[in-house]
Image (cartoon, rainbow, N blue to C red):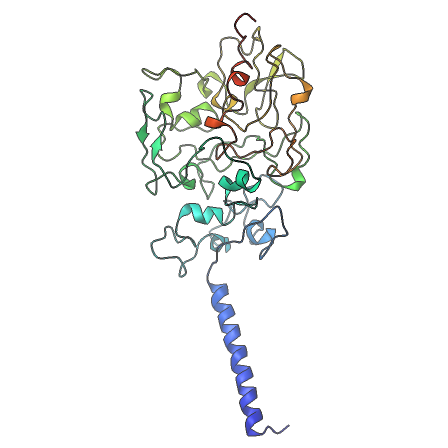
Length: 367
């Protein structure tokens, strides 16, 4: 078909526009962009699960629903998944590690919001709840409470000056602690976690064996891991007046505590603290497994919940562990929020506050 001059001009413009569009698309595809976060309250926008969690040929990282490494670790040297988190030519000026955002925290938060909030620190605010404690303040401070051996504070030597996500977590799952069972329902597939015998999949939370500025290295999560930075909070530190805690040297860790064998029971067994409320009560008289031992840090500092019977020192069925929703959408869940140690509705990240906490293990005066 013959084209008149005007028709040739229109055709040339259309072809040119098409080439420009294609070229722009190739430029966009060639630069790694920040991943769009998966929002558990809405339909995912922009990407699907396999875009971050799927495998490249030869990679060994597990897919969604197994041990939950996600895009972190398990890849071969020829993987194409690095661009999920790193960008070579589009990294911002003043940024670090070729990350698509200016800071480590902002890069982590581009995926780890999942709640309608602004990252793991926005879970409570997204539900209209005011946090009761500071939690671990990211990118705002380098001060470690109880970081000195005499119980005083110290300034930590963190990777970016102030404490940030990668000081505790290893994005590539390198030199991390052993997997442990936790409380959080990460996905609808985990639900419901409504019985104390039902627990979520084990994961290492990408926790480093030795956090940056930590003074100890440990392969398990427990008091020693916390005390690696908060050294002055561990029992036996010089000049410290602090509640004693057990460390892994005594055989106690997050997955190895003495927990009640059931509701209204005064007997205990060795088990995990996670996925249950049975590990937060130490009945009187102490059982053989508890006798002569102290609690670990997480038996007092964990997600806020209702636990224990102060009059009997046991756990009643009305205070059973129950998580039937993700990220606090169900107010009746116990604990409702599973965000420790990032934020909490209680001050100082305590499980319960005031006498409600102390009387889980101690008999009240005259009692």
